[in-house]
View 1 (cartoon, rainbow, N blue to C red):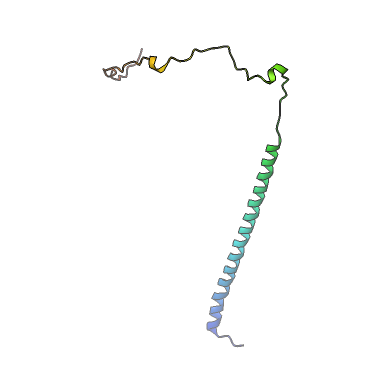
View 2 (spheres, rainbow, N blue to C red):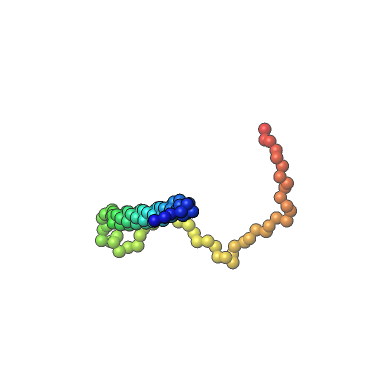
Length: 109
């Protein structure tokens, strides 16, 4: 097998390019694989955490009498306000015709 000098130059250029391309493809595929595995693991952890958080419900028992069970809730009745006046009875104040006084910076002493 005779290999000429020109063929050796082509091999010296071609082989490193092919090897670098192969290494780049392998690195990209490994990165995608690890990224996908990490994403799936984080998703599983989030689902487990959400399932654990939604599972616990705490109930505070309140003993009610038989009369209190069916009545509406009792709100604070300490203050009672009259209903507002009818809209037709509301008297609106007129806007002032003169402009407001000019702003002055005065130091109060």
